[in-house]
Amino acid sequence: MVEKNRIVLIWIVAFPVVAFAWFLLGESQGSEEVTVTSAQVVETTSNKLAALTPDLRRLDRRPMPGHDETTQREAFRKKLSRAYNEYVEFSKYPPWSRPADGSQYHLIAWNRPVSHSQVISKTKDGREIHAEARIAQMFWGPGEKLVARVEAWVIGQQGTREEVDFSARAEVRIWDETELANGRRHRTRKVGPTVSFASQVGAKARFKFGTIVPTEIPELSRKVEQAELVVYVSAGAHTKPFELPFEYAAKSPFEVLAKRADRIVAGSLEVELEVRADHAAPVLIQATLFAKNGNVPVAIFDGFVRPKLSGRQVATITFFGRAINDVGEDGPYMIRAIHGRASNAKGETYWRCDQEFSTSAYKASDFSDAEWWSEERSAKLSQYEELMNDNTLRTP
Image (tube, rainbow, N blue to C red):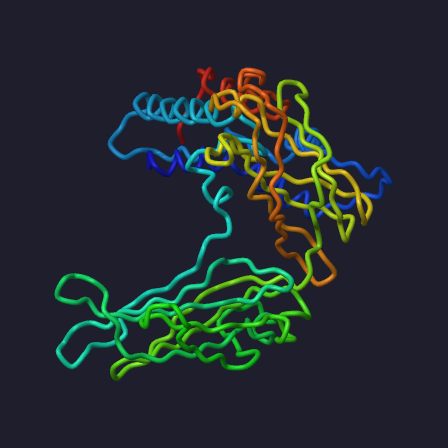
């Protein structure tokens, strides 16, 4: 029960941020202003979160068998105090910009390789035949060819990988439209040709490669698709499938064209980007600020901007000052791993920017070490404090 109450409390902390993200995606505006900033996101958060925040008094406080009222009340107060301290620590930074620590790795190295490995058979002398299928990245964009690599091997007497005879073929599969229409994701169907694998000059014999050209598969070009490459590897007496999920965007609905300027505003690093948007709809931008020539991640931006017109315009993102100050690495900084999600006529899809942008030569001490503060944070802390000081707190 202790753990359950803690989970409930932590969910209350996270719920407003998640709910607000969905709120942003669903709301539309009609203004003609074309410059969008991360400050708009913060301001809107302050105005809207009051209606989204659950009542802390509705927490699960069911009785603890074998404990009297006083013991149960004190146990609940301790849980509440622990959750309060966790929220104080978490909310020193805004949800849209935090230090680039291990919890942000999915944003720093966001387009990682996809691989699947397993034992598929045995040799005549009983050694296991291992295989691995791999593609270089999860997200693929316009004009890119998807190259898959398959490796098969047995472990030799010296513990090294030794080649083994195998064959491989692959096919692209997407979710069956009939199943999706019925709200289910149980079945996929093949699209495009079967791809054969072959050795490449200069590569080790235990590797074979196959190439998929998404532009030659109409189903991938017609609409946004989350798909999978299924590679069938045959060795010994068996064939096994290796499933590699990927996402393909035939056209990018949002582009970062250049960096216009960077400056310190209210103790944080504000960066102006020249962008092109296909639609006047919310766009998620995720980016990482690096120091030491791009080798040390410092801070991340993970928030929405709201283009109000289609076409070229300026979008401003902000790296929170305390996040930079805490890490203590001086600039100039590099802005990399720029990507996100946006809407287009065919649905929502990812976008990415492969460019890197450099900032001015700031020092970490140029940025504020002040904690984030907002109406939302103030209201949440007040709720916690009021409940912790409530002497009439009772369990059922």
